[in-house]
Length: 408
Image 1 (cartoon, rainbow, N blue to C red):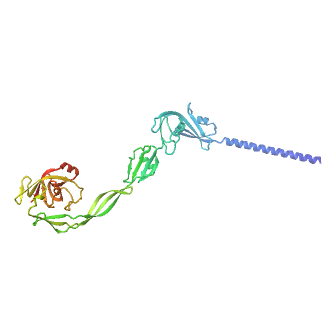
Image 2 (tube, helix red, strand yellow):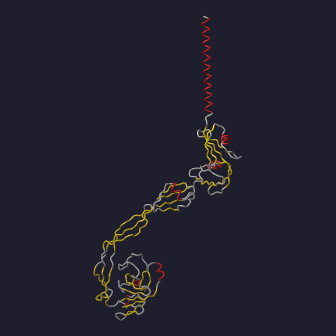
Image 3 (cartoon, rainbow, N blue to C red):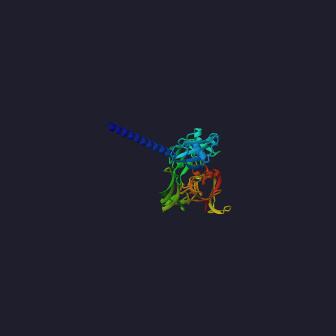
């Protein structure tokens, strides 16, 4: 029995030795693995101003890494290793420099600090970009000693497009930049206020007017003209309609301007007569003389002969009237009492004295025709109203003494 017990004891001791050996081997392997992993080369990017260098190293000390690769730190330079432990390791060298910083609309000042980018300067000064803020140069730009950095704080503005308005952030940008940011495309004829190069101030408004043009056709009545014929068989001042007049018709084409969908003006581009008017013919009596009491002129003299030559003006006349003549203006296209349209050379008279259609000559005015009812009908002593091209010409004429010759 003793021999069996001794044999069992020896086997047990042997097994324990094997287990210990295996554990020791495993620990050694693990240690070697940790050592191997710890010594795997690491890829690191070094950034210094505009210089970027990518290196592979086993070194764990960031400062030693940059020194091993030829970078040195000045007294006030800073090595930013906050991204060294990341998978894509980065070491950033921020050099001491002086830059000029200003908030838009405020005085600029010089700042000395360790920095590489505009963002570093903003962070150093405690400036945080908010929605709509703009910094120039951009926050990711690399800065150099002496650079100027300007921060534009967002302002509020109004953008009106086609009559619809929205609130926008201005950031002291130009009108053109703000339109682009707000995806506003201008049409060929659209107008913009203020001008595209204008820097919009805080509280300003941009107004875009959508402008389009369309053709518009219309039918228009063409009024008939009244033609007069002298008739010695009828008493003077008597009128007789020989043939009635008939209005015609024209087709007119306008170019209509629309602003934000509303028609604001139109321009005549074409006019075609589709039905010609028929003139009205009126006989005017010339037999006998007009009653003296109906004559509106200050003085009137008639030639006793059938026709008398005016040697100064080289024409023949049958009658002449002397008195005052005033001037008047009405928009082109307006109709006279006789049915004619207004125009230079068509004057107003007393039709009971000088029938419509009578050819005349007025001193200081020229050849003309009786077409409208003038001052003579009011009893104010004036013998004619002379049509002028503008109100300014009327003012220049005023009231003048003239002689009216009835042409032979």
